[in-house]
Image (cartoon, rainbow, N blue to C red; front, top):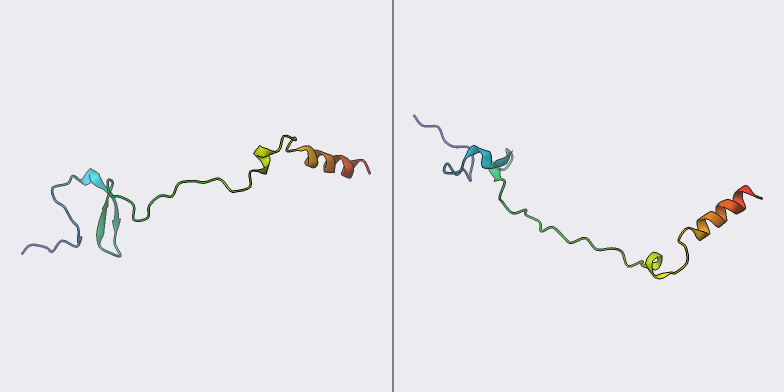
Length: 72
């Protein structure tokens, strides 16, 4: 008596090395070459470009505050 295959998307033509993971809850085989369900978004810098647009030193205020703190 043959056993029923528990995986819904089993592809016997593919080698075992193509398997990335097994989803036991949904009974699915996840293969390495499958596209992700959510598209990867492109990284974008924040809209605060103050650091790059100001000609002054970025650390000027920081060092000034430290100087005032220790020399009071």
